[in-house]
Image 1 (tube, rainbow, N blue to C red):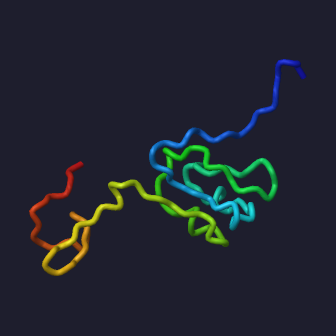
Image 2 (image 1 turned 30 degrees about the vertical axis):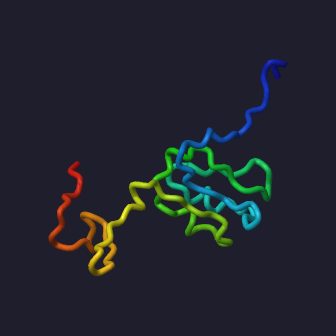
Length: 115
């Protein structure tokens, strides 16, 4: 092996403004089920056995929630982007709904985005 060749290490990309997936190291047992179920390989197994997996590409998360459902210890939490957390509330009734959603009132002042 050439002396210039070094081992490759798995390091996470810097996290963008939205921290999508958070793994609680106190609850995680390092089973890597979340990494096995992740559809876009946002979560990768830790190279050290028993350590929590690494969120390597946080900006590529699809927010499908497969990792959250796969975790047997509820060690993963997901924070959805602000545009997926917005709801509207009618002052008169307290009804909460999303515009364009199935539970939206039939007559609204707003139209859902096109495209």
